[in-house]
Image (tube, rainbow, N blue to C red; front, side):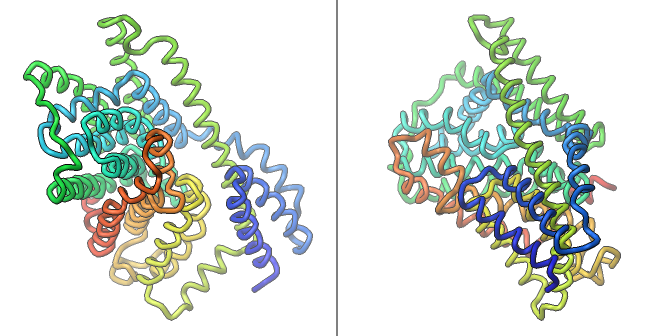
Length: 465
């Protein structure tokens, strides 16, 4: 291995050491990127440090000015507006009106609400936090088992990363230069499968142990109709985005803007109709904008750090060396892919989903291209039996499903920590036990997507015709 590649390898070690020491991801990226580039300039004569440093001053602005990335703050704002206008609470009540009459119905309602709110917010952590605050008191009031209640909410929160529209899908599409619309389309069927599997887990547990999910009081017809009425804004928001994207009426950024507009108008409608602090008050609008700015600034800083780090690794030649080495390994490409997915799960112990997409995918993607046969081979000649464009979409959905798994995998499991902070009376070990059945069906779902790629590729191909 050449000296510059060894410096790149040392950069990886230092980066993960900083993460283990709880350094901020963006700061770790920038530090390793700048120090690593300086080290390369000392050891390799044709690499100069000063010109690369001069590039960094325009790099952040280029990210901020990117039209493609403008969709991110819009989706984030949509999620915060939905939370502050109590759209998430209305969603939960509406779903409960449909499903609450069955044993385990409130837990199933929580899964359905997580899927619905994930479609609006696009963030797993926001979904777990918001729906946890709304659903957990109701589950506790009805006497649900703490293990089932917290496990359901931690697992349900993972749906936010995959149910379109999703910030993670947008970032992945930008990193590998895939179509954002096709990524959204490809996520629909795997997302539906996840919801069905999670509901099946709840139904089986309730069937085996009915006492863990007591039946609630049935709603009157008037109460049910009132709750169902509140589902309309969610259906309109989600439907306008997905149908608009699927039918080619608009691209992701206008779709996100449409979602923000619909939720804002709904909030103003509630404010005018009900008064008494309901709907979108000035204070709630201000809080939504401040929180959106804070979250977006964090993401843009991570994006900037990822560009700095990516530049260092590219100059070290390490990604190219790994890609070339992968071709020579006498192992089936499918084994390499499974190893990559296992590494994703392990990285999920101490990295968030955005950092994994921005840091790890640029390393992994050249490897997959090479073992698939290169950029220009036909589907018949490729290792996975698909073209490069199909591989981008299929691997992207697989990656995000595995990253989801990291959010509920011990010992870290970020979603478990979020729910544990809300359920202060439930030991964290109980929540981890509660997510075990959901973890099991997620492994089954990953197996399905590996064995049947058409589950991912069917909708993009159908809507392209």
